[in-house]
Amino acid sequence: MGNICRSPTAEAVLRKKLADAGLESRVAVDSAGTHGYHIGSPPDERSQRHARRRGIELSGLRARRLAEEDFARFDLLLAMDDDNLEEMRRLCPPGREGRMRLLLDYAAPADGQREVPDPYAGGAAGFETVLDLVDGACDGLLEHLVQRLDGTS
Image (spheres, rainbow, N blue to C red):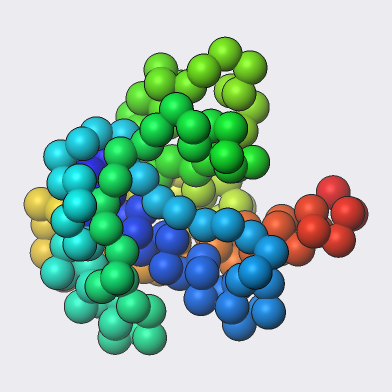
């Protein structure tokens, strides 16, 4: 939504997984919000603090709003929840709709959750939940990306 909690967390987690797999130069990763609430701001300090405890650095990221050119620039656009996915669909130029999914579509089916909850108004447990969900989904997303890069999907 505002690109200061969930999306930058997912961006940084995926970047780290790509780097660990030696694929950081083959996949472009960026995050954006569907609303312009915090343009230019760093991620929420609580997001940064919880991510840092897991070895993930968010401090260099800055919030931005999803732009029309993102729909052409990226092969895949991922939303954290159904409301943001719907807003992405509303912003999407004709012919680009097939590029949008929920991040948790890449999570293990046993996780049983479709959306990454927004931790902004909650406490520490919410930020840890976001990290847990994002980490698991990014494992599945990395597997998907490796298959695409190898030409097996």
